[in-house]
Image (tube, rainbow, N blue to C red; front, side, top):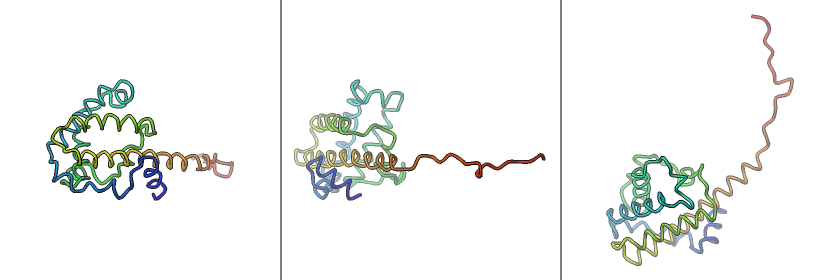
Length: 172
């Protein structure tokens, strides 16, 4: 995990401690701001023909908005609605089957920054702190995906059974 944190800091330019200094933001900006942010973000995602539209095709947009909103609120000091409903899975495990690489992280960050800029009820300082969290976290996901891929490649290939491993059954 330390490698991933170091990589996230290096790639994002954001210190881990500074990135995680967001636990006061729920109280400061309020639930409606998180809901608006998530709605604006997923409006962009579902319209994004270049990257994300294909990933989310056929998936319920309202559920995506709810998941992100509740995750952000919980992570930033709000109620544990996300964990209560979805369980205590890590963000890394939630994104296991998805394309998570530097270009995808950059695209996600672009759409999120555009969404943040549009939410007038979030003050400038909070937006800056949220952006640091998003940037660090996006790059943490990229680093974790790379670590998982490397571990997968280092695993020995499946061993085919030898003649000793085959059990022959006689007549019943």
